Image (cartoon, rainbow, N blue to C red):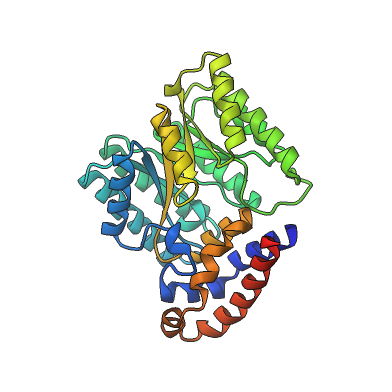
Length: 333
């Protein structure tokens, strides 16, 4: 299955495909895991989840930001979302990628953009702003920006990826910050990250337990793995850890029944809701994590409506659809 994961990761990193996909909006099944591309669609999704005792963290999707103008546009979009969250008084906060704010070409610009977002968040009842994880080569940038901001703002946190050898050190470094703990969604070299599911799971559980025992701030355990979720629940009981100290998180569109059952048990629960036109790379990474979700893609990948809207994208869609169809057949065997 590793070869298929590599295919999806490669597709997610293809700028041409990402740009072309914007022409057709969330397609190929992505409309099942992306909450539309308008503010009303997003707010409707948040309100629905809130009615079911579930909070939301919003990811304004975006990849391959290479100019100041693009980073400025991304920042304004994030501020628009925050304004809507405040205006409609829904239970939600933001997850923000530094690369979307310009870190790939100007780290200081990204820092200034994020600082402006945090200042506005302070006006909205200290709305939490989470710095999302990205590829390992951006980790030092995230740490550098976070270390500059954490003294000024109390509503900023970040993500720790459990497959990294450095994950435990990062847990130790930020006991006072709100953290989201994930397994990890990128392909990283064996020199910096665990490679097998067994090793990743073991390290993930290790950092979760250490964090819950020692944290001085809120912890988000983000996983769809029901065995790990059960383990965490039992660990909390055995160590008398209160439910108010943490939450579980899942991605929008995945394992909704399990998410609802956990929320009904009285645990804090948040759904990570992606939003916007720049959906392709996000969706490919989700398929890399769970190739079984290919059924979402194959049904809509090459529909006449998609091809009509896509124009030049159609040839790529047809070729990619053939590849996805073959992979899907392999998975069903």
